[in-house]
Image 1 (tube, one colour):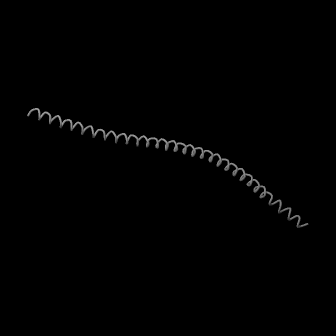
Image 2: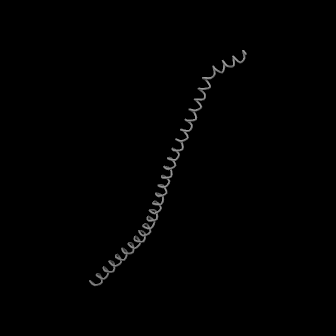
Image 3: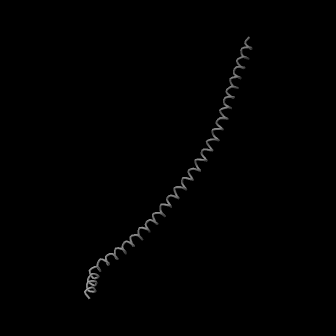
Length: 108
């Protein structure tokens, strides 16, 4: 009997500790659930931002590619025009030289 009385006293003494432990486990479960939901919503938000940024980067890369292609075409056209200008200038000089020779021969 003494054993059962001491057991009942021990159980009575430990009862508040068990209750506090149970409450702590409940709070911990709620906190873990809240943290998990925040992580999920943060992850969803972050992934949306990341996807949006990746989309913007792809768009920017496409624009850069188009601009580089335009730049190449303009550079090629510019080189052709420079070549034509060189030949036109040379033709004008040659024409001026011929004109001067004709003037000189006419005055003689």
